[in-house]
Length: 267
Figure 1 (cartoon, rainbow, N blue to C red):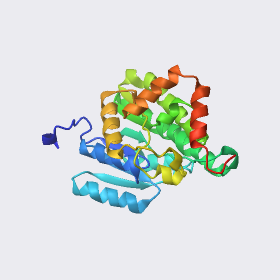
Figure 2: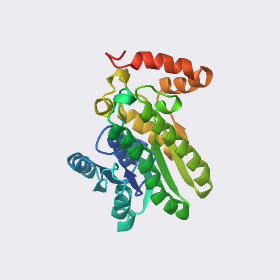
Figure 3: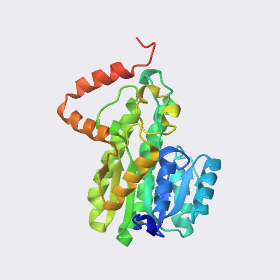
Figure 4: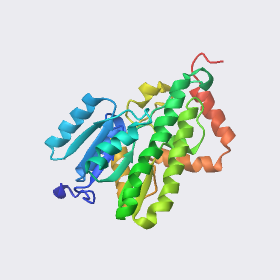
């Protein structure tokens, strides 16, 4: 690894990655392993987690698998008990797990809307509250919260999802300001359309235009976290849109997005 010129600040440190069974989560686990970290990977699909663990182990990475569904409020404590509680100090926490739902809010399944809040918001707070105190105590640690470019403006037909990602981004930024004096770095990673299962699971094909590779998102995110950047927007279009929403009326942006994203057959 050294020969590749890859920064090794995370060598031999335990990293916990939630939602590691697909997409950005898998790419983040691989990127952290490439930088020398030991991995705790969590998710709902044990077969995929086991396959990723096997892949990383063949490359010399120490990996432990913790199966958990963050839609269950008890899951964060279960993850903590299987990691720190079992004697494995987590120095890098990656809050990546998340889900969305595309469609008119008034017609979407209520449980799916609430699940987004539980996974995208509540689980992030619960996990951070469990792991960050240990980082503050040791005066060292890294936290990543995967938000989205959807956090910079309301997004009709992804209404709840975008709102949860505003929460994620603001939570990360506020926490970063609190814990920086203790040597703990917190980063909000704000990807745009990325190669993943998100669009299929959320049924959000209307938003699937040019997509960025999960590997590129992960590389930029981990580099930014390593350097202590509080916000990482990993592609130029996202950085431009984040600037535009500060200059253009929100009502205009929502009008354009609503017309473009409106589900077919909706009056």
